[in-house]
Image (cartoon, rainbow, N blue to C red; front, side):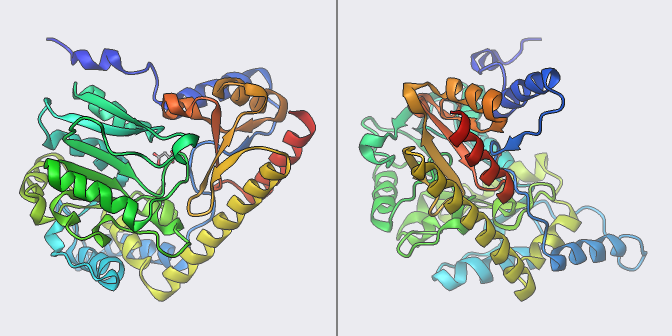
Length: 387
Ligand code: MLT
């Protein structure tokens, strides 16, 4: 037996596990401290009642012979696929067949698994800083990665690759910087992909946070994108499903990859839980939409509280307007981990170090506005007193 040699090239721990280990080590020595968690982008607001009721109903159906269900279709129930097309895409003038929309357990798995569709010899472009799963999945596959620097100097907006690349990962609104692209900026990437016969894997996990006009919610708002883009969505951040687990990936026929992804899913995925799919369906009801909008507004307001508080203290901050993340430069010329350690030890605040998202994130930390409002306010007070 020979193990996959590329695993040796990964950092020892996944970023969020690394942070959890450090936090646990701190808590082991300070068991009575109450931490203010603004690190991982995990939701804190309860689910709208209509969504919970849908899960109760679905669970009850499984208790009766006449409504019982076994395996779900590998790519999801058509009633959910159609609901997504009718509620999210059609109002934007975009059309898909249900078979192009693959229901899954969330964006994280698909973003990693999609890498299986492509030859090892492909070159991959990944923004720096970035959500670390794209990098890890391609290191595991042994691919060459070209990092595209996103820095203050270019307003964290990526420039097109200088050498030809085959696979491009884009995430907008961006994790971790919170920056968005305009239609014109995104169009450049679609045109690049069409010219170079590349494929874009577009992570739209945070699209629900777009609040300014003129910012695309979907890459398919750009003409020609269906031929060159796969789009990955999650109900985790838009509807608070981090525990429920449901998302969807659109693989248009025009990419030539739909049949391959279907083949992959049928072999390796036994379908998303029926209860989770009914919960996802309920997000599109009027009550579901209202409950979700209320929660999103709560997180948006929290983002504003964090941004304003940090700016007031003189911090340099980015994002937060169309995204739940605030990217903040460390004070005193500290590096990311030094600031992280100060926040943890002096303020009992947990953030995510920018360097964990790539070299260009060095000197920054990311605060998540998915945290409880009162914790964010308390964190700002402690930072003012102690940093
Ligand atoms: C993050 O904090 O970057 C994300 O929440 C992690 C994830 O979605 O897997």
